[in-house]
Length: 421
Image (cartoon, rainbow, N blue to C red; front, side, top):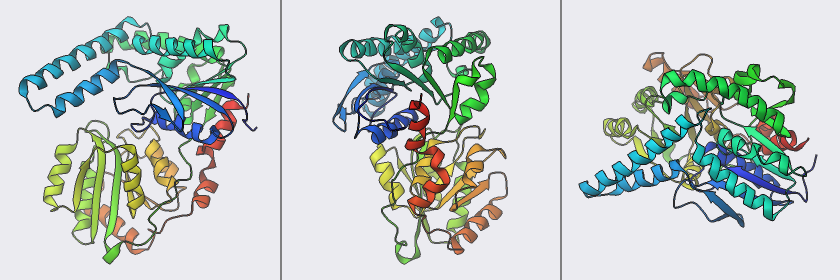
C-alpha cells in the first residue's frame, strides 16, 4: 500500500537533536513519508535546545514535568556557586514531587500533566485541519489516554496507536510505592483493552506484544510489529584504521543498576594489553566515575567522551572500525541502538548477561556480530575478541545485505503494517 497525498499528524516523544527511542521511531517514519505527504508533529519538549522545526515542519511542543526536571538538573550541574546549585536542586525536587503526585492521582499511574498537554495541543490541530491519520507514539500510555476521548469526535480521521513501551508491566516501582503498583496495574490491564477497541489500528512492538498480548481480550486486532530503526545510514569511513590501530566505539546510555559497563571495560582493558586498539565511550547516565577510572588505568586507551548530541554520536559511529553494544542486565528488551548499529553494516561486539538476551538472539542473524556473555573469565572473553579481529571479520557489510536480513525492522515494513487498515 502506497501512502501518498495524505495529511498525517504524529505525536512524538521528541524531535532532534535530543531524540528518545520513541522520537527516533517517529523520525524514521516521517523521513520515509515526508516526500509524498503533508505532515505535522506534536512533541514533548526535552530541552531548550529542541529545534523549532524538522525538515521544514514546525513542531508544536508540549512542556511537562520531565522537561522542567531535565532543564533545572542541567542548570544545577553547570552552576559554579553552591547556593545556586542548592536552589536548582530544590526546584528539581519540587518538580519531581509534582510528577510523583500526578501519578498517584492517576488511576493507572501515568502523568496527568502530559495527558492534558497532549490533548490540548491535539484538539487545536484537529480544529484547524482535517487529518487522514493521527499516529500516537509519545509516552504511549499518556498519548493514548489523551487521544482516546477525541476519537469519537473525528470520525473521518484514522487513529493509529503504536505501542513501543511496556504498559501492563511498566516499571512503576520507579515512580510509586510498591503497595500501589498492583492496584494500578490491574486497572491498567482493563484500560489497555479500551485503547485496542478505540483506535482504528493498534500496533505493538514485538517484545511488548509477547509480554502483554495475554491480557488483551480483542487480541486479534493487535498487530505485532518490528521497529523502524533500520534505514540507510551507510558508514562513511570504510577504510582500515591507520597504522593498524583498531577503533572501538560505544554510544548510548550506561546506568549502573540497568546497563553497567564494568565487565565490558575489564575485557577491553585486557584486549588493549595485546592489541593496538582505542575504545571510545559516548554515553549518558551515572557511570562517569567508572569510565574515568578505566581511562586512567589504561592510560587513555579507553576514553570517556561523555554526553554528546545525536549528530555527534552518529558521526562517532561512522568513524568506528568496530561498534560496542552492552545489553541491559535482564536482556528483556531489544535496544534501539542495536538497529542503529547494524544500519551501518559495521562489525559489532555485543556484551550480554542473560542467556535469553533478546539482542543476542537477534544478532545471530547479523554476519558481523560477536556476542559475548558476561560471566566468563576475562581472559577467555578477551581471546574471543582477539580471534575475531585476527579473522579479518571487521570489514563492513553493504546496506543492501543488511536490508535483506532485517527488512522487518525498516520504516517501509512498519508503515505497511500501521497504515494498511
